[in-house]
Amino acid sequence: MDTDIRTKAKQHLACALDLPNLKEAQALARRIQHEVGYLKVGLELFTSAGSEAVSLVRSLGLKCFLDLKLHDIPATMARAAAAAADLGVDLLTVHASAGPEALSQVLKATAHSNMRTLAVTVLTSSDEKDLKAIGVLKPPLEQVRDLACMAVEQGVSGFVCAAPELHVLREVAGPNAFLVTPGIRPSLADSFDQKRVADPAWAVEHGSNLLVVGRPIRDAKDPARSASQIVASIATVLNRAESDHP
Ligand code: C5P
Image 1: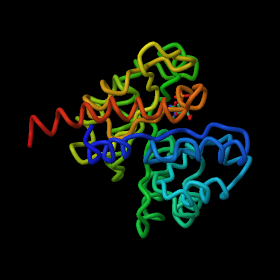
Image 2 (image 1 turned 135 degrees about the vertical axis):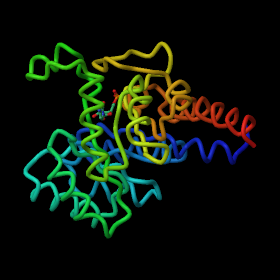
Image 3 (image 1 turned 90 degrees about the vertical axis):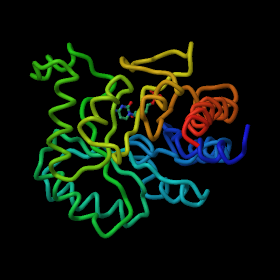
Image 4 (image 1 turned 180 degrees about the horizontal axis):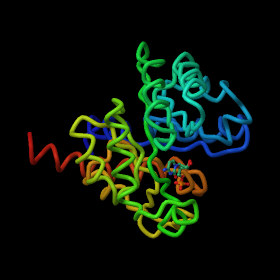
């Protein structure tokens, strides 16, 4: 496989450092650092290690995806987002359901930085029954579309979405939007609690800009090998796209 294509393919893969402390995160990060473009720091690691987790990612020369899924009053979200931008974070998640004022204030507070704000619409672990339980009576896809339209109106240009929703998000957010897809399962892997899953090649073919993979890499016997196999399937799709449109 062409090394250029592999280098590009790595920029489409984020591994979630879903681990309880900095020591374990360091160990996984070092094993996979040459196979991914991004490392994702989520609630568990950030709660335990704080900004040192972001520094770890940056010290390896990788991009940092800070997945805090902020949802609070607009002023608090804006201040937290500005603090993340100051740490040198590349991608930060917020809940679109925090509302238009919160999204607008977050974008204003971080406009000076290179950090991109990603809005989460409906979590990939939720299905229609889960939405009903919290009072959302629309089907998940309709809820995704409505939240995305509202976020786009505020100027949001990045989204986290399940693979089967990629077409809706692309339609709503346009060709330049940055679409990030968790719930990725290399074929035959356990889907755990993710209810809307897809394999890596399918997600990239359907317009995902960044795949988020947690347990299939973290829990693999050989995490670097597992990441490398995902990169290879992404590279195959990119290669095909380049031959179709040289
Ligand atoms: O282990 P798995 O591959 O399912 O990990 C998915 C990661 O993506 C987790 O860190 C989870 O918090 C995150 N995520 C998600 N669904 C979203 C947004 C983020 O599963 N909508």
